[in-house]
Image (tube, rainbow, N blue to C red; front, side):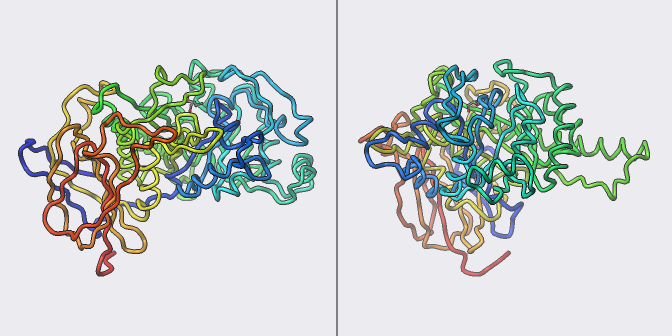
Length: 512
Ligand code: AHR
């Protein structure tokens, strides 16, 4: 949550926040990842059994990727897609490798060896220290398949699929908590694309059955972009059955400011989705009350949160999906990712989970080669946020000039204020104040009055005057990383042009 006063560019900018102004807990699941059977994400990314440079463990998993995922403290990982899931048969990916069938793959038009499947993913999550989050096939898959997968993963009973898991060497159930009811079912590119009416009916019936088998699971409804009639309708039809509502958005812009302000569209989408969630709940209560069929005091109707399970900068014309979507990110993209994360911290009240799409090689902060790993520009803001922007989200007030140019999407310019200083603040549990600031301006450094700061202040900067906005990181030439320094906290602070700055200071007294 932030409020904003627009000023002329020649006037002094200021940022206000206070440890007394907590607005919400920040859910750690905000820093989740996503691994799809797409391009080189799984094969050649997290699983690379033929690697000859000593970069794998006994399972064929890339240890450099695992180390980075741990460094990023990734708490949850979505799998196996994405569009891939719409034709995925989970049964093909378990049991002895030599017996697993090779299949045509219709989302990205490749072939699927099934050499990496459920048990490998569970093991990989364990190595990373992340919780698994599985998406169900609501394209060609049946409810029977979905129930079988849930039984395979979670059941302790003496039944067929639970025993199949045991026979495959996994006595204990995996207790997978997060399950998605399909992926982007509304999309024309989807195998078995569906209407909102039919999907909502199906989602309701699937949710009921899945929760009969395992009432402890968290079910995620398939929404769209958070600002569509699909979102409204499916929420209104399924509100009593689901725990989270999924939305997806990719942002980009050919020009720097267009690119970096584009994630503000996600902020508006989150606001609209949260209103739609409340609309569905009010409607549910009202209808129930009027018909006398619902004792609203007894009915469990916790407020579903938003699961932003695909977000990132992506220009599909630059990096097409069927060619592996290997985006080479530049500093401008890293600043856009920092704005994305500011959006999530500001809107923390509504966010139950967010998973960047994707974690490795495919539109990802990490790129593997035969020889090693490249941390793209976007890795650095992700790392700083995941390390420090935890605990409680704090209200902020910003006074700065605003961006007035072209936006993507075009409705953004007339809908949202676009301050040149994009800000979020967090109070961590150990009493540190953390202030995340993106100076969007390509050319102007911004001298800024800050809230009461108790020095010494730790400073981390990504980008700034020593970089060009088109700088990127390639093998052997990493131009964008983190610059660290220290400041006594006196006077004004100057945010360098095109930079992301994280300021941290320890509170002297504990004020909650
Ligand atoms: O993340 C890449 C793709 O983008 C996903 O498979 C799909 O869900 C979305 O369209």
